Image (cartoon, rainbow, N blue to C red; front, side, top):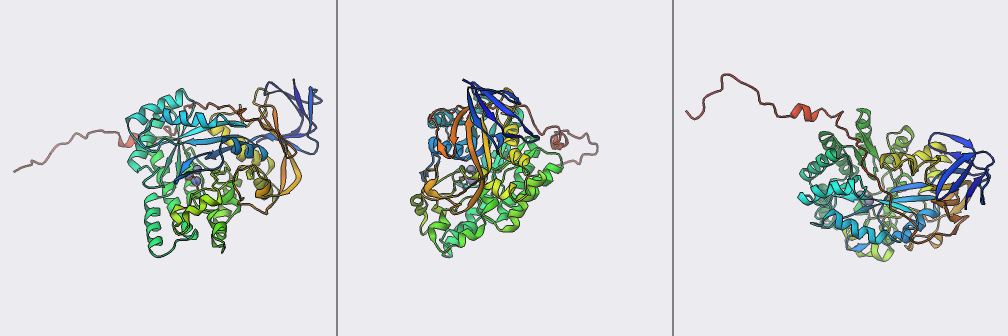
Length: 484
Ligand code: DUC
Ligand code: ZN
Ligand code: ZN
Ligand code: ZN
């Protein structure tokens, strides 16, 4: 049974042209004029684009004494409703747990996914077991990305010695390092000081994580990655200092990528000064929302290409969960939603305002990350042989975002009341219509794991550090006598 998407304009990261798309067996089998299929989907007035890929989500994640409330079912349903057809979740091993056992836990949770998905591995502790497991994880499980938390001291944080060991191992194996870049020691000190001074409300979360802690940690991770010769992906880049470090590294020819979130691009720190406790706490995430100067920097980075990907860090907690932190902001579970809104919000604030072209929109929501993660052109492409993960995008369709109408399992939406223009008419996941004009036709368990083996990309060729510091004893004459 074939399907054909007719009368649309195809938009990829590099081309815009009119053509029909013929689909069979979950894949694109032909692109051309006047194609016929058993079922026709009308794309008149629409753009046909690669489905979005959100490379940064936390579904049913054990965190800060609870679990994030969207699981692989509701999370991927929300994704599809907003035109995203693949998500990448972070597998978090417990202290001392083997990476392979942690993956088993994630395999069990993800069987309910409505669309395709993959995992990143987090390096939450360091030892021989992790060193050994890394090879199996990359070569057999097809997970080539490893995240390191420089924040969350006493929980997920790794120190610089562990970071350097892990980065070296990844360079050897052809993996990619990722970092959550905030200086966890400084955050812990500032948090304790704020609490001691009676700053207990959600606004203190922002005071405890100024942009300098992110700029410092980003630059540190870049330098350590350079010494190891490993490519580096910086998640949730939220400020100018971090962007500056990434820009400089890229200008020097290093493989370093930055990932702003749709929340940081469109919401600012004033959210934390709202008189309503719940309103502010619902927006507590790390890094926190910033001021307009930082937002301008992020938009400029997307325009110039110094920032590569727009994600969400979707990690949704209910109001009830947020209230664990009444009287102590450090106990508010960190995280916000956004999976369903990323594409419409970026289109509205990016493309409709003229900041991004439709082709750049495709690049930063789908194609760039598919290439970085090594799943292109299976994902992120409109090419014969690619998976039919597609969104038929109606640039005239409008809605007002509201929690009452969302797919996410939580009871509010950080974008509540915002008008968006640009929404999916159809979302197709491997050829299956999951969303049809707002109607949800998802199928629990349809999603498959996407393997992403290493592709051997390193920064070795550029890093001169190893060569310069290679041990080379100097032959000397006139060595002073000792002990007399
Ligand atoms: N930041 C969040 O806000 N939530 C989940 C983890 C993270 O780094
Ligand atoms: Zn993070
Ligand atoms: Zn985060
Ligand atoms: Zn995250």
